[in-house]
Image (cartoon, rainbow, N blue to C red; front, side, top):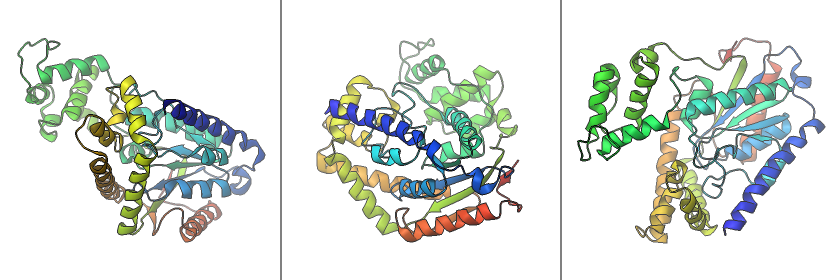
Length: 364
């Protein structure tokens, strides 16, 4: 099974390169828009299972587009079945970017993603192609489009010390012993009372990041918040949102979760946990439930049910998040439906035709 997964990952990489090799054979978007037009960026958002990949492929093939991943798990190599990445056949059709770019023992933050994605968007538009950002990780999309506050990079060494302090382990210089997550909150209150007031005392990841920012930058995190963000500039942005009927979406989610387990998710998870026991992506939906099955905490039937429920709940949270995105053109239905694809094509044609008119989505 492990050999099959390595072959699958290799096929994905080769297919991605094959898709990029087709670029020279297709007309550039600049031939449609004209050389003086402000570059256009298409963003396809929506809940998991709504058909974002299918819609992105349809638009990319029609408008000389290239697909840019905005899914936090699909950034990582070796996670295949649970990440629901585009297949090798799909990657051959058009160029794909920011898939399989990190090892499972690396940490890719929203800020890391935004920096890399902005460079990719500039490179794609510089060749006269249409960048199409696709994915369901709302924080990463917001980091890309709106920017994050100017905090320092992660320090894994500092983070390990702070985790040890929260647990009272031997790595903790306080030597106080005993599990006490409140230690981090008390430390943050001394460093930055305003930030501490906004973070729950048991929210260890946020507390660690806030303390890390204060110590690394020698400034209060709350003061950095007030300095604002740096939005993506130089693109007209067309946001397309998929909004399928709720029961139909849940039926698709349930079936996809079942297929993951039938396709070898448990075997893939076993092999990856043996090599990366602490990898954060292996705590994502599907992999987490497969890990629980491997540890004897559930059986296959319960693991499938838990995965289905977790994905349904995630879809709810995604829609709540994306409803706050500005100027989204919501499309009722799934991205693989002909009527939805036709509507999206017409919207994109209208934007290209009206390129000279002002739009509140344009940032220069």
